[in-house]
Every structure is written in structure tokens, then in C-alpha cells.
Image 1 (cartoon, protein in one colour):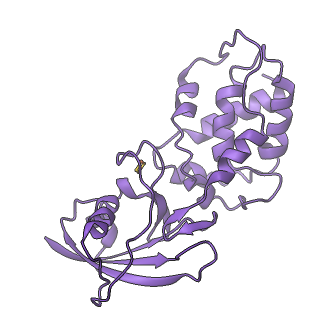
Image 2: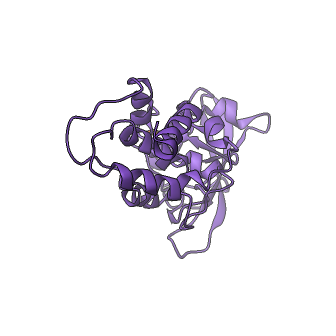
Length: 237
Ligand code: FES
């Protein structure tokens, strides 16, 4: 068993002032941040590192195995999935880990944020298929990767061009999802609309930093997905 300190940015609600609170944790370095948070919350009466009573830490999780994206948060300043970060690696020599909510989405409480803007982007881009008989033109490999996207928001957090609510750039999450529909839309009635909305919601606003590719927690080939979506939506090939 080792001793760790979790420094957590807390906020009681969307309008409340944030504050920092530290928690002492004793455990195995091979535990994940998610399991440590769960353990801290499972104590009968949680206390901070100074022994003062503390409210349970709000955060989201679903699958515990990097499949749902719910546990995305900033771990030591980087957008990560809490269920895939081992505390022994994250703590470093100081044996301390800093946790914050994703900064580009409104805080619901503590580490939980409202990511509904991602889904609104997908709806706004008209990502559905009308008509029938859809056949992918480029094979199914990229379709598979597009469907794996967790919509966790890590790519948007890392992107220098994405600003919540700003028109003209919905970010990589929307463009990756668009691949699934653009690739299959040859005979779709809404093909032209989808392509036009893709151009205005993604193509012109992407600065090609590819920070999304580096930060994606499940290693999606985002460069290939974007290149293919751009080719279909912009050049019709
Ligand atoms: S809990 Fe599902 S990805 Fe972490």
C-alpha cells in the first residue's frame, strides 16, 4: 500500500464558486483514478486530507473499461479517461494527482460536466441517412473506427480551435461521427445537405494541429477519418 494525495477542483453546482480540496488515499499504484474515486466516495463519512468532513466527489462513469467515455476529466492537466489512468504512473515522485473537470464544458458538479453540446453538434450537422441502399465506397475499416468514438470530449478539450458555442467549428468528435454517415450516403436524399453542413461546421475551422489525434484515449486514426470525410464532403470523391 502506498500513500497518495488527490487534489480535486470542486464545485457544488453550475453557478457555485470552485475551490480545491485534497484527499489522502492509501492504495495500490496499479489502481485507476476511477477506482480510487470510487473508494474515496464509498467511505461512510468522507473526510479531506486535514480530517474535515467532505461531500462525496461527483464524477461520471459507466463501463469502467474505456468504452463509454463518461469518465473524461483533466488528470494533471491533460484530458484523460479516469478508468484508464493508473495512479502509480500519474502520481509521479510527489505521489500527488490533480483532478479537474474538462474546462470547455459547463460544470454540472465537481468533475462532472455537461457535454450535451457534442450531441447538439451532431444533430446540427444533419447526421442521419434518408432513403435506402447505402454502401460504403471505401471499405468498412474506417466505418468501424468511426463507430468506436466514445464522444468523451477529450479531443475537444485538447483542440486549440474548439470553443463551446462558437459557430463554424464543431471539432473532431463531430467530424469523426460524420465519417460514418458521409461514407454511406451515396444514394441518400440528404447527401448534399450533410456535405454542406460538414463544410461549414468543420472543414473551414480545423487548424490541422492534430492535437485530437495525439490525445484520443482509444487511439482512433483521426487523421485518416478526417481526410476521408473531407474528401467525400468537400471533393465528392
Ligand atoms: S467509465 Fe467508461 S470510459 Fe471510463
